[in-house]
Length: 263
Image (tube, rainbow, N blue to C red; front, side, top):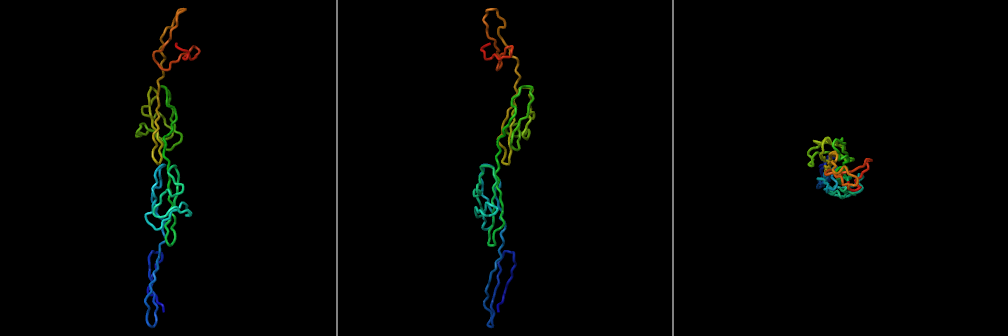
C-alpha cells in the first residue's frame, strides 16, 4: 500500500512544496521518498529606465532594467530581431540609431523565465532638433517721417523678440513683429534701434539674430557756392558744395550731370 504522508499545493504562487511517499507492507513502512514541486512565477514586463529624448548631437546613455532575469532586447514589436541581452542596452545597438538628425527609435524588452517570456515593454527614444537662429526679413532703413512696417520670420517655431542682447526683456512672440513695440522707437527723428530674435524648441533657444533699424535724416538742400555770372569771354570756374554726402547735379531736364566732371 502506498501512502501519501504530506501534500499541500497552492497554485499561482511562487514557492516550493514537498510531498512524502512511503510503501507500507506487513513488515512496516518504507523510508519516505520526498518529492519537491516548484511553482514558478510568470515573468512580468520589465520596467525600462533611461533617457527617452535627446537633442541633435547629444551623447546617448544606456537603457537599463533594474531587476529581472534573462532580459532580452529587440528592435521590433514582433520580437524577431534580438539586439541585446542583460540588464542594460546601449542605444547604439538599435539599428540605424544616431543623434545626428531628428528621428524616433523604438526598442522592446522582455524578461524570460522557465515559464516563458513576459509581455514586451516598448521604449521610445526621440531625437529633437536644435533651434537655429531665425532669418528675419523686412525694411531696416527708413527716412525721418516714414511709416515703419513689420519684421517677419518665415518658418520656425515659438519665435520670440527681445529688446536686449541678454534676452531679458521680451517684446513680442510670433512670426511678425511691429518695430513700434521697441521702447523709444520712432521715425520722427534720426536714430538706430536693435531687436533680437530667437527660435525656441524643446532643446532650448537658438542663438539670437540681431536686426538693426536705421532712421536716416531727410537731406537738406545743398548750399552751392561759386560764380553765378560771367562776362562774355570769361573763364568759367567750378560750382561747389562745401558739405553733404552724395551730391548730384542736374540740368533743367532732370539729367544727372554728376559724371560730367567738375561743376
